[in-house]
Image 1 (cartoon, rainbow, N blue to C red):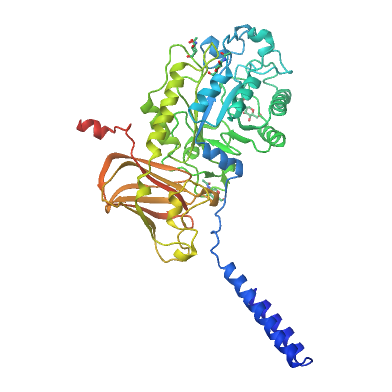
Image 2 (image 1 turned 120 degrees about the horizontal axis):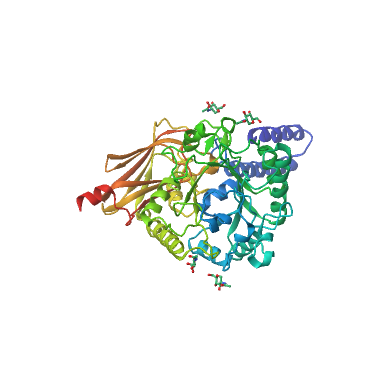
Length: 513
Ligand SMILES: *[C@@H]1O[C@H](CO)[C@@H](O)[C@H](O)[C@H]1NC(C)=O
Ligand SMILES: *[C@@H]1O[C@H](CO)[C@@H](O)[C@H](O)[C@H]1NC(C)=O
Ligand SMILES: *[C@@H]1O[C@H](CO)[C@@H](O)[C@H](O)[C@H]1NC(C)=O
Ligand SMILES: *[C@@H]1O[C@H](CO)[C@@H](O)[C@H](O)[C@H]1NC(C)=O
């Protein structure tokens, strides 16, 4: 572009020369000189190194926001809470729903203290009982003694969460064991869509909606019009993330233990998925490096054994919750942790305490990044060291999405590597954290980690966050090398960390005690 413009200016200059005097010739020369200088500046300016091209598919803005949440809280609450069941019959009397001390502010406070930014409530579970006063069925809070039938749990939930700047989501069970229309395709889908519209019109700013395929094989055969449901959800609230086995925004991880695959791609082919199909669990667990859709996985698991509150159950141990964290958030997923309110309508003190411990443990582990006091060397840098903006320092700042290290793309080098050099040869850690700049697509297929030249990890995907919790504590290390050996395009690393987890007592450590 610059050359083209310059030639045009020269052409102008030539034509004018013959018909003008010496003075104007000099002034034209001057003007041309100035123009050349201006152009030179523009050309220099254009040489500032640009970001690399993204590799499709990419996440949407809403999917990125969802990923950054890391932990979401699920609240299973309804008639099952009072019958001590996991799946209701649909024949429960509304009169049993009476959470006399219900306080949604307490739910939100527990979530806030645990650093949770999104809470999802079961507005209706398989039993069909609605926690909001639906005009399409009397089987709801309207017919219960709670607040003399004038209450609305969904509204209270939304108000309390919003007051503490926590976002909300809802679950509306497709399987409905109470509704007489269940079993008749069109009437039931109309009923379901009516309730969906009712919820999304009345309760604004819903960030996630949950659909599942859970159903007794002996139940009536109904086809769910998922396409219509999903489209209706988006037309009413465009920022909403839709969760189901098959997305379209968030996919199920394929199990209810909170465990993602060791390889976990946020990409997958939606056309290969269908809701409620048990044969796709493995595919959901690992995703697909060639997948055409960005559909990251959510790991749903309960803090207790059951999803609903049962007097006889107690929360999982801290060590178990941390295992779940490493296996979900640490493998490129979001953890959806269920914390069920009890019959009083409150989150049990023991669960609240465990959650607080859980958050505090995560903060303790990741607050201190030993890599920050190290010097970092990289295999190459996009635009060179003078190019400025894609250097290794970007891996140590607090931006884990848009500030990243980018190697050169034209390089002949087979691998890309990062070396973390200790200043005193005394690094002590047992967790390694790597994060990709997923706004440019998920890229890393294989990576290796070395300590002082000895390989300690041979891993696969990284994605938004990969945590390697080591079997043994590494002590007195001089240099840690992260080598990216296979990648779609060049890897873009947004953050790295070396951490010490004092809560982790591996089998090895226990054996030596
Ligand atoms: C509800 O819970 C909050 C937070 O725990 C507490 O401050 C408030 O007093 C409770 N409200 C009632 C009516 O008990
Ligand atoms: C359920 O209905 C679908 C089509 O509507 C049909 O393909 C399937 O065989 C039916 N299943 C049972 C168990 O009747
Ligand atoms: C997913 O789709 C891509 C593009 O069509 C294809 O190359 C890939 O093989 C598909 N994956 C599977 C598991 O079928
Ligand atoms: C529910 O949890 C609250 C808070 O720990 C507690 O005060 C209340 O007694 C519990 N209700 C039942 C039925 O256990």
